[in-house]
Image (cartoon, rainbow, N blue to C red):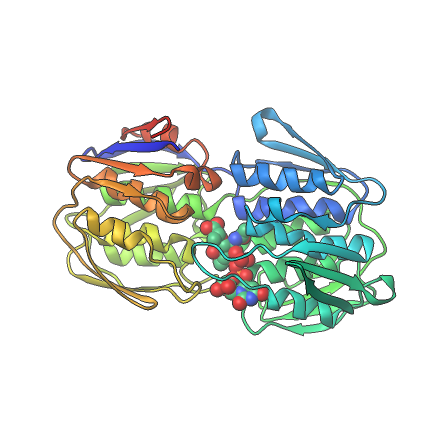
Length: 423
Ligand code: EPZ
């Protein structure tokens, strides 16, 4: 398994291009199942998760072709498709469960393996299945697979109120509802930009959707959807991650393609911490206001609140802030695995359940550390960029899931970073 070596201490200056959103692309790709006409995505990120979704859709019978070095994904699905999503693909990536809604909408039945838990939590699918059941799907669990069937062969519109604003459940129900008979209302829907991006693409395919981006989404089912070409929205989590690089190391970096509306709550916390963010005609420019970073409290919430996917990265910044910060992780039950690794670098962190208390220290010290999940891995790189000495981050396959060309992007602004094959 590869490692990444980081030698800290240099301020960062220059520009970093931000790619298309992994979490938008992973829900846009299954939308090809909703039509027998071609769906083409542009500005797609080059990531291993996208390759996994490609494999899954091909196993279902979709034609998926990657063009322009992976930045364009051309898809088309003709005739009947295989409706069984196999465990050996689904277990690699939870987002595989986003084929459930589209398969039910297209074929009236589906067998989708439960993804199983992952490092950050149990990740159940009850909100997805309860919603689909309200739309007339009979779903039962057999040998680790969800066996789903639309009674009468076609889903029906329904009023569905989510107990929690689940991103994936909103996406599954939204896609299923586009071809259901009648109208569907999703209450307490997730409001993430990736939901708006999916709805925008589905409307381009002929779907009738209103209210995406708010807590109530209304969908009027139609008989069929046609093909479309859609540009994947900018990745707000990659954006926020790289905004923290000059914040932690000093210097000034412009994030090309960055949009302030995608990272509102995050920027509010950066402002309190002493980071300046200015909009330019190419994106967002980030630098420290003056002096040391100040401590700030963070609670993760569904959008538009502070994103859980930036919690680990924010913790890396706060390790050397002046004062004590309290981070509350309210979305996942086990998302502080980066804390023990940061402690190996000299951070002062106490974790009690879903709360981590970080007491700032002057400097972190480089050390060998272990990536445990996608966002934890990049938070260790950020910490290493500011630490004295050398940090070796092992198991960087986690990184390849969500960050394209990470060494090139960091070294492009002056970071002393390299990837070491195997170890
Ligand atoms: C999406 O996961 C993202 N993944 C996650 O990003 C992100 O952290 C998460 O939304 C929250 O923003 C993709 O978009 C591919 P949820 P998802 O359903 O849809 C519980 C990354 O790093 N829940 O909003 O799985 C669940 O256990 C990844 O890019 C149920 O209890 O998130 C969790 O505690 C990590 N029952 C919480 O809700 C359900 O049926 C949030 O889950 C569904 C979810």
